[in-house]
Length: 288
Image (cartoon, rainbow, N blue to C red; front, side, top):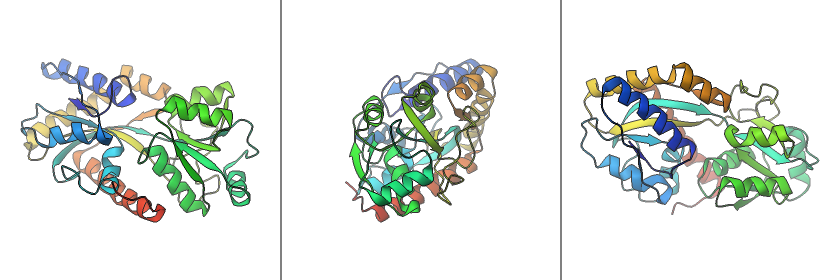
């Protein structure tokens, strides 16, 4: 199972959890192969070019759907070169502001942005934090200056210190800081509130109508992998996500297990690809 990010991140952790279950159920060792670089495209290309025999899989994250909008020439087709197996998780982005910010709600943040120049953090151009913020700004009808950082800890530190006014962060790293009082959480990006933090409203209900961003991880195989293999792997992965061990671990981190059918996962990716192409064009983000 190729993971196009470094070891230790949520995508890598999920690959190891799911891989362990596949190994136990199918009696085949699952080796996790971290191949990083170029926004995940290096590891992704390796899977696109692999034999479609079910022995090479890819654990993807939201950049897979964003890359068609960010790269003028990808070394693969994000849809045609892959066979979706299953979505693995569904996760919200949490809108954070400094604890010293005068904005105590999403509406107040929008009003503040209309009155004075603000900036926002991300973990790089094309990251989900970047695109989620640009969609927020578009829906709210305001502007902010983008400040990309190299890592989540750096971006978190920037919002804690007031160096930036906004940072969209994932629950696994955002909730501990919000609960510690070092940042203020104003809203979640998904259509529903988080079970792990039901007191935080959705951004849509907090004042930005129609706003919704869902982060996800999922498993793909090379295109033309036989359907019986896809179905067998889908069944194994969906069952893994229903085990008490994995379900409890994910829910405690504000991450929702989200096994689904190959067709449902394909539809989600297609919708996100179209969404991020539209958002990047509206934001004037030029493909590399």
